[in-house]
Each structure stands twice: as structure tokens, then as C-alpha cells.
Image (cartoon, rainbow, N blue to C red; front, top):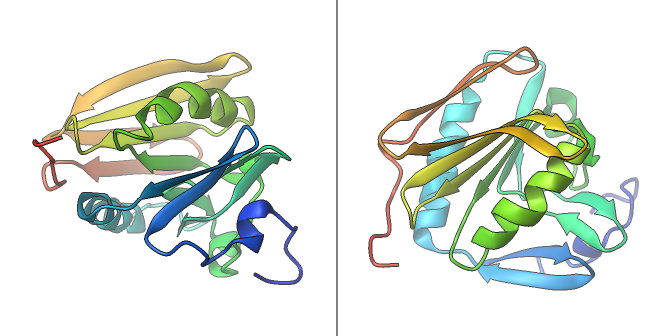
Amino acid sequence: MSTTEPATWLGRLEDSFPGRRTEVVRGALVQERVRTFHRQTLFHVGVALESCPDARWGFVSDAVFPFDADTEFCPDLAVVPRADAEANRLVHAPGSAGLIVEIASPGTRERCHSLKPARYAGVGIPYYVVLDPYRATCVTYAQPGADGYRARDTVPYGSVVALDSSVLGRVRIPTECLPVDSGA
């Protein structure tokens, strides 16, 4: 962790739990083992985001977004200003992201759809996308407001997730190649 970055719980614990996603949720340290389908989904979505047409944006993975002393989210992918992505920073201001992408698992699904949308919308993040390799669905949240996102759409895998944004430009995430865990 850079000495110029703000101190966060996750920053102090960086690299302490290899193979696990770690977040601070309501004051509790929460961990989830990262499975192969999670990594494969992350790879495919990262490739899709590389083609984001607006050069002002870049993407980061497993960066820390501290909301308050009790909540630090670590989304799978976040589209942030390119200068922030190229600076290789660990910590980002929650409202700086143009898009947050989470890959749900049976253990994180509730947080992904209940707690996180309200927090992300509350700081004005234009888009929040939850990919679920266990249900073969992608849920997109858009139009943030004080009470959460005003638009929500569920797209089955096999479709293309289309985000047409005045902020990010035209973002496309193809889902036909994403892995599906039919045994979960």
C-alpha cells in the first residue's frame, strides 16, 4: 500500500488472505473463497471492459472503496478515471466509479442485491452490474438516486449486456462465453 493512500482496514490487510475476497461490511470482516468460475468470469468481463470507448476511463480489480468506518467494499471490477487506474491505487473514492461489476456467489448474492445497490446508488455510481454464474443471469442497476437505483433489469446469460451511458459511452458485456455452474 502506498504511503500516500488513506489508511483502510482492507489496505492494512492487503495480501493477508490469498485466494479469498475480503470486505468490511457493517463492521465485520467478510471473506469468500474465490472459485474458478469467478476468475473466468472476471477475465471475460475485463476483456470486454478493455474496449470501453471513452479513453478517460480505465478499470481496476479488487480495489478498496471505503464508505465509512464500518463499510469498505472491494468490487470485482470497477471502471474509474483512467488516471486513477494507471496510478495503481488501492483505495478509490466510492463516487469516482462509473461502473461497478460484482460476480455473485451463493454466499455473496444477498449483499450484492440488497446492501450494495443502495450504497453504490447513494454516491451516484451510474451503473452497477451483478453477474451470477450459479443462476446464469446478469442484473443491471441504473439511474441512481437517493433511495437506490430506479432501473433494474435481469438479462439471461447468452445475451449481450448493453450499457449506453453519457458517462462511459457504449459498453457491451457479452455473456455467452461466461461459465455457468449448474451444480450449485
